[in-house]
Amino acid sequence: MWSGPRNISTALMRAWENRPDTFVSDEPFYACYLTQTNIDHPGREEIIRSQPSDWREVVQQCTHLTEADNTVHYQKHMTQHMLPEIDIDWLTATVNIFLIRSPEAVASSYAKARPDLTASDLGFEQQHRLYQHVVNHIDSNPLVINSDDVRNHPEKSLTAMCRKANIEFDPAMLQWPKGRRLSDGVWAPHWYKNVEQSTGFQPTTPGHIELDDTQRKIADLCQPYYDQMLGQALVF
Picture 1 (cartoon, rainbow, N blue to C red):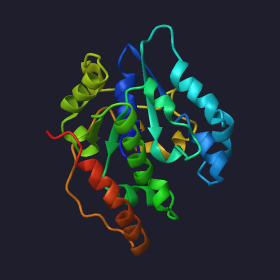
Picture 2: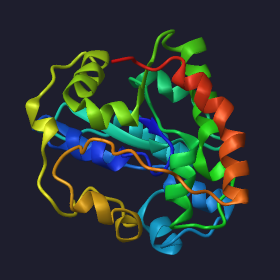
Picture 3: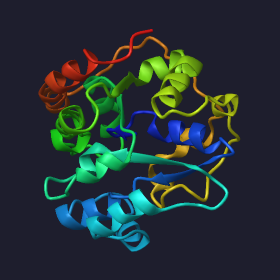
Picture 4: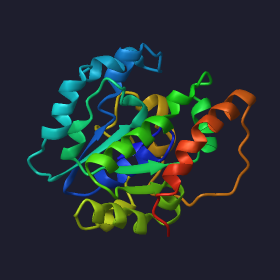
């Protein structure tokens, strides 16, 4: 699952982990990203200690890691973590699905945790690059799905994801217990407060998004990439 930040990606990870046949990986390239960019994120040093920082080792885990009792490996990836120097040919070994959300909503939510955000932090250009690679080299029709549709039509959305992955939908994906998971990254205390209280997907509610001038410029820079992805998104 290829998503930018602040985009119900952790809730989706909860949904998939609630399947009895599935194990999950939470942002496996995070330490690599922090090491290569020197960006200061909350919990930076602990994150770097918790994961391999060599992208080649991460790729090995993503393409070979298995658990004896489970058959589905769900990987939650942040698109901004996929730096240009990372070889993405390994995507041929996976089913690639793209989760999108409007730049305004992402910028507003992300700025609450990291006010000095940049367009690169939000991952829209990186997501579009990954999408184009998949279309051109792996799958001419990858699934693109809007996070609002997941929230408003969770069963239809999850069924579409399962169909793309050639597995059966499991109703267990619609509800999960509250709390933190052992599978959560060590960054959970900084980012997962809301999802830890969740038990399922909640419908979207109308609301006005306030952005300052800098956030507006960043959202505007990301908008063309989002618009192109939105044009390919599943319609309900």
